Amino acid sequence: MTFLVVSCPCALVISIPLSFFAGIGGASKEGVLVKGSNYLEALSQAKYVVFDKTGTLTQGVFEVSGVHHNELEGSLLLEYAALAECASSHPISKSLQRAYGKEIDRNRVTDIKEISGHGIIAKVDGKTVAAGNTKLMKKLGIPYQDCHSVGTIIHMEIDGNYAGHIVISDVVKPHAKEAILALKKAGVRKTIMLTGDTDRVAKQVAAELGIDEVHSELLPGDKVSEVEKLLSLKKEKEKLAFVGDGINDAPVLTRADIGIAMGAMGSDAAIEAADVVLMDDNPLQIAKAIKISRKCIGIVKQNIIFALVIKFACLFLSAIGIANMWFAIFADVGVMIIAILNAIRALRYRGKR
Image (cartoon, rainbow, N blue to C red; front, side):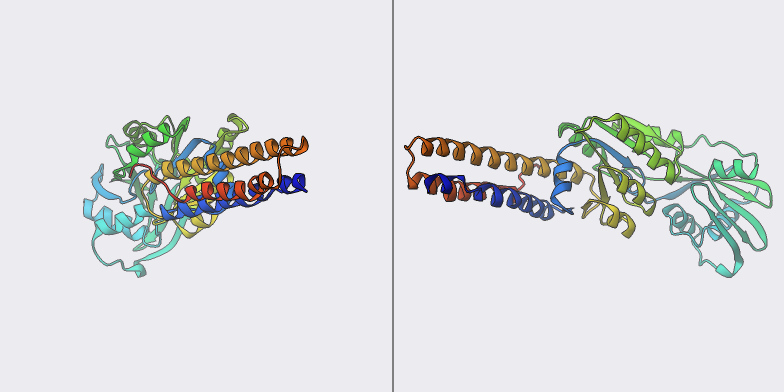
């Protein structure tokens, strides 16, 4: 009877799930929503963190900073760009509409065609207007002027002629650099940035933040391909996390080992596809989420080792006739209570704020 009481697995059966529940609850109190214990465990093994740039490492608040190589007046070129982009909700389109500064008359715009990863073609006042990146100009066979300014460049074509380009700048988030350092201190081996922006803009942001690797001028499908390559290069026990916020990031969030979405500004599609959702847009939360997950897994391992060591010791003592029923009760109920109290520690996170 003593042997049977000692061998009862109550401590393991109760304390291990409770440790995960406490870890998920503790993370949620810190503004990190984890959708399951398996994702919490995977997050603790994250060695590669891949970032989308816009809205994740940068604020996603774009402002027009210049109009260059334009034959038309700058205000008129902005007007054509704003009207052509009027149907889009992309931050760059919104910045063009803000720079125009007047009410958009959509009756002036017809035949809007959005080309993913390239730009928009539309008819404005009967004129064919194309607004997009260099890929769009190459696709249309329009000779364009390169820009020496750093930022997102919107090239304009009107009725088959190059009309100039508009420079739009984004701002790095205040805690982005600190977040990259925090990830490296947390044991992340490599940070990677994927973006559809030009190579020059991407490299400038990566250098400013201390990111190890950068891939630029990517279409949404290209981001999935890059993540596939990274997944094939990592070791089996290492996990890759992808951090994004836009609707275009949803396929990559699904494909990564752990998808992390920025909840405050993230699109519904990104939040739905992600395994972990940050309830604000502070990238420092990523390192915090990893630390919480590792603390939780550490507590789970402590409970497993503690319970098994005590039980096997009491089973041995019981088998040779030394342990009595009081030993058995301690090995069962006592160990279970201690393991539960240890599991509750996962509710608290005492990292630096």
